[in-house]
Length: 315
Image 1 (cartoon, rainbow, N blue to C red):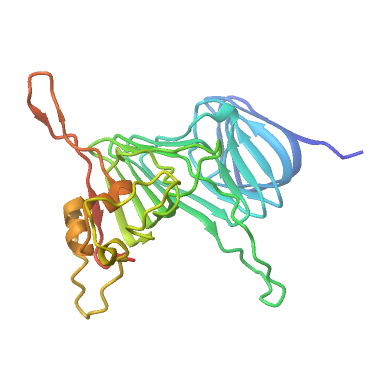
Image 2: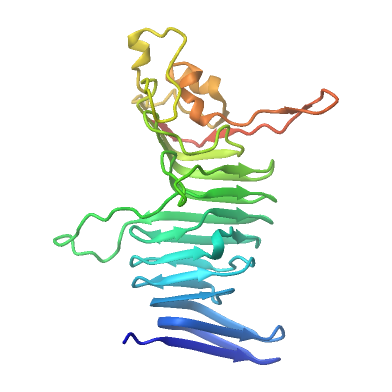
């Protein structure tokens, strides 16, 4: 019979507990009762294996290892860094959003083969969230190293209240965990930053369009099969009577010492068109929400923008 382990800790009023690391090995139940006038200061809370759920996790850093399955209940969100490795999974109860609403930095990292299984990330109140997905496994013997397939899916990102969400890489052809579309959204004072943004335009784009977010790309914008018509997959077929040469033209980076296809600027489809030498229709997947008009006919400056950082490549 499989052993079931539980951990219970109660801190009463005016009590303080300072701990460097707590290792919870193969837990099936976790109970932490901390009085509002008490302090439970933990640097690292580490889950090794097991399957456990709770409405709050303590520690500056929460680690999931050795196929740990950890579920966050309730609506409180997280106030710690999160590291998921060893084919582990962090998820939200009942598909609720993962909320981060503390000012300052929060780091979320997953190793390839592990999952941040959420439907939505909400960043608020001047939070800066740094997300690195599918990082390479550490301490792997090169002689025995085997290919690992990503288990990660996309999720909605909603940044508001002067918040920023930074993601290392994002594939627009990847579905959400429910196999459907996902959305990117910010208010006027917030932004979503991608290191690499990828889209194979011969396949279906699973990002809601137009994109309702201010976006930045710092490393590369990778567009495959640009302008190639497809009968299925959700993308438009290039129109406007393009000749065969124009219809098959690909976007590539400049090789000159001083690239001409990259400036630090807010880019719109017309600028992308000028850089690539192609027509706006091919960039429909990157279409951003434009300005709106009020009921009295005044234009509202609510449109979103795409910023390419210094050195960003268009490939």
